[in-house]
Image (cartoon, rainbow, N blue to C red):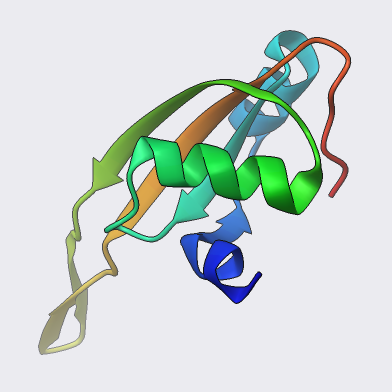
Length: 92
């Protein structure tokens, strides 16, 4: 069970993701950058007890950030956009 929790890090809750959830039954998650679509699908189905129809992924690469004279980078994030079968839902 820990393996699935390592793949799915957290839900991404924004205005856009909430709109996707209400209109299209689609949810957005932050996932491990090394995880593939089949692993993400399996983890969502096991953790939330739902049926997944489709998984889309996208990588967001780190942007440069400055604080005074110090420069660094933001963290790398991989997002998974998961479409669920009609009648299934996830509550946060």
